[in-house]
Picture 1 (cartoon, rainbow, N blue to C red):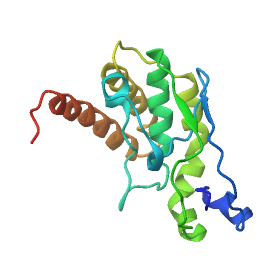
Picture 2: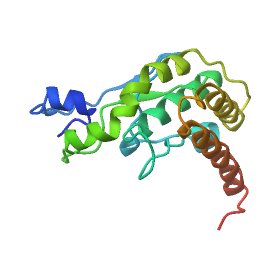
Picture 3: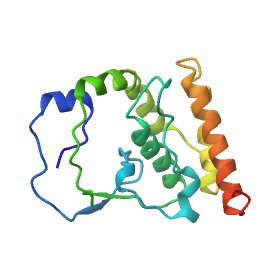
Picture 4: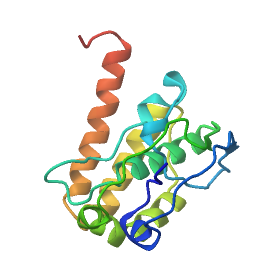
Length: 177
């Protein structure tokens, strides 16, 4: 069972494997971020759904493999505002694919450069709103305002977050086919 580490950690621990299954789940404390993994995710659509969106990824994006972490950080900020609990634990899937750490390092280097500033932002941002959608829209605006000068990615991210909330609302009303 191959850990899904960032490239530097994977290079430092190339032979590490999870050799035992532990059925453990913990509540992530309020004001504590976590690196959500979408391979092993469940959420309440009505309570937090509009705030569960991966970061932009794929060709042309300046950072890769941070999409899950971004989703965890952003949804946790909204969950905290709404007084919703977040659980994390051992994955229920068997991850048997080790990716190439050198390829990953090329994808991750901007995230490694930006993550301290982003984590500081997510640890201190105060979002406004009474629903996941309104909290996420407020977070999108604050993210765009804070990081637009760092990289155009964050302007695209802000726009994508706003589009996601709009599409989520349309889907909930049955307007998407």
